[in-house]
Image (tube, rainbow, N blue to C red; front, side, top):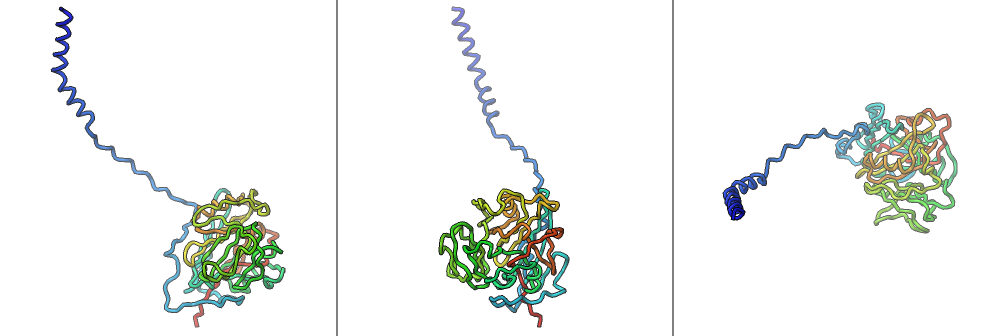
Length: 327
């Protein structure tokens, strides 16, 4: 009987306390104000030395200038066009060069805007049916280049290869071993991955190909990292001096090169160089001849790897020329 009374008493107490538990439960489950998130400091990339954006391109003009698609030189650069040690500008071309150091390696990044696709040109030491070589700076001076780089050492891979320069086909014997870069009449880049026999032509997407290169590989394509760096004759896994040319946008190009592990730099493997190009915003980047062939020419002289006692003579160059005629 006593136990029944005790049980009834406990039940009554629980019944009287239940509303307060319910209120407490409602209070606990009610949403509370979310604490303000701490502001984080913006991430600042100090590696690229103030890389320019499209606003640093060319100004609109009433006159459109162009150059013939042949092996004639460009217009003589204006002396007053050299704004600084690393910048040139006239109504048809704007060049900005940045020099930096990353991962114990000196690099150059050169942005080029041109008014017409014909200003992206190629030249050789003595014709693309010759195997003559000479200092790349001499070829560049002869062509009145504003800025120039080494090409693909076009006869290096003969008898196979793809040699199409300034609209002229010299060799079309691809064998599936290398990526090909095609530059069309509008100055746009196209990568053909290891084309088999007769896998390239002098047109692409209905447009005439002006220049074609057979070195590679493709480092970056449409902003994505290349997938095949197994080029056994490219010192693939050996830190080296390297050169690439990239398209950034319409008639906007970027040259990227790193210096030699022999002269104060670590250098880069082929994959490291591809990652580096991608990190610098390259949209489509193509590997060119490297090592002691690496040349960046500006203001009448080679400006990269200047302490190299044995720079390699070149068979060909890629250059950007002025089309401006002030008269």
